[in-house]
Length: 224
Figure 1 (cartoon, one colour):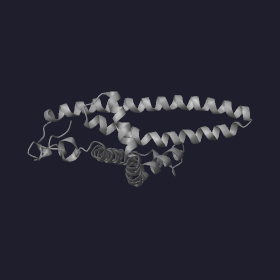
Figure 2 (figure 1 turned 90 degrees about the vertical axis):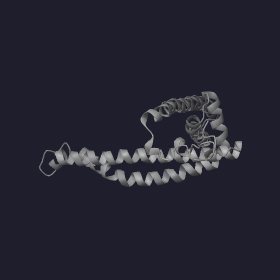
Figure 3 (figure 1 turned 120 degrees about the vertical axis):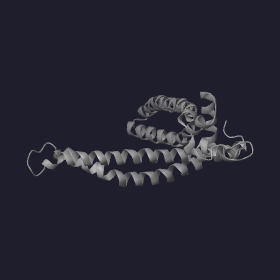
Figure 4 (figure 1 turned 30 degrees about the vertical axis):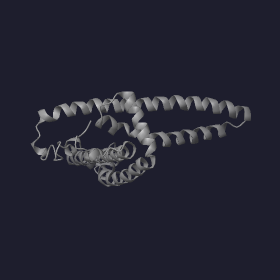
């Protein structure tokens, strides 16, 4: 996406033919994206660690409160509802760390702060994009992954059988078909998750334009 949208000073595409780009030209950008991915993974890990600590503290507080009231079941329900509310509120903004770290040369904490700002100010847009694209990807993966899951289920159920009626699950052709169905499912999964990342990237461009007034995908200076 960076190479595709990058422009020269006169507004012409910097890379009109992406097929002509060599690996040597692409390698620096690829290595930068690897570092950006590590930052994004670190941000997700930090988020879940903080969330787990918060859950433990909330559980202890609610357990103490409900014990004094004599209703432990109510405390458990309140903790679950409260945690789900926090996750639904914070997960969309934290998802913006992926495009922020990918498209900007920015430090970890500054990128995390900007991601939360963009995410909270365009929260409904992030949720809408995630739900719509997620449903589309889920339906496609459900259809393409059905043969693999069905064949795996049959093999798990009947692999221990030794009679001729179920011997087909241990045959070479059955294993080969299962292998091919697994390849289709894994490849479709990679494509589907890539579509989700592209959708988040365009949502990031919308947030950047809305908050900072920067025409991100139309900038004549390319990317940061």
